[in-house]
Image (cartoon, rainbow, N blue to C red; front, side, top):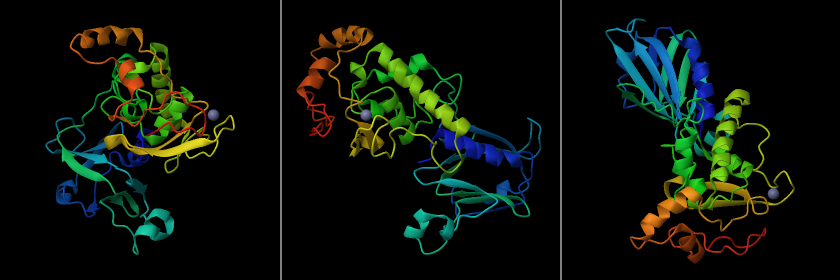
Length: 313
Ligand SMILES: [Zn+2]
């Protein structure tokens, strides 16, 4: 799935056509009126998390009589090509799945052989971009305090990090790398982490995403990854690879059982105060819940944390 840094790079590529008039449109989208875009000027582009927003207007003024915003979400396999169409020959994935060239969802032509071609994405017309600068990990305004509070939930950190409501732009690669950087087991419950460890994780996610946006390339992950798709970690330990089941955030997850052991850590001070309140209503504390195991999340064995041991049931 394209993550925030990749979408940001695509927006930069698309930005070369800012101020240009849309001469022709095409594609198999059924959710956008292609006719309405023709003759409008591409006047703005913004990225929020994994979503891209493009504005088209009848002229360059803010009071332009016609203004159209399109929202793109690239899903698992979506992509943007500039001045080229995706073909069977340049796509291993599509070569395996299709016998003909993939059909673009939307094509915006700005001149002879100058165009943007969107594939495999969801595109729709919206009134305006939906931006929350405090939850976009790529923005300087990303709210670390708010994100830290969000992580104090009785849910696995690998689940929480992928929640776009608070970590917009974080995808599976940033998730895996941030967890390794903070030496956290992916199924560790956020409510068991110390404030220092939570801060370390939040900062790691932001730093990795920003480094990727700065140094990465448009169609491949950041170079020099530590754990994602690796057989061994930087210290030479065997990397675990498993499709961890956590609802809508189920993804292949990589971790090192030596460097990232599952810790039965006590809740942080702040969370303990909160738990005291809930315990009066008969609810269990996170520590009790974790040590007993639960059918809610598949983490039940806490004693064995050495490589090769069965951490999951
Ligand atoms: Zn290791």
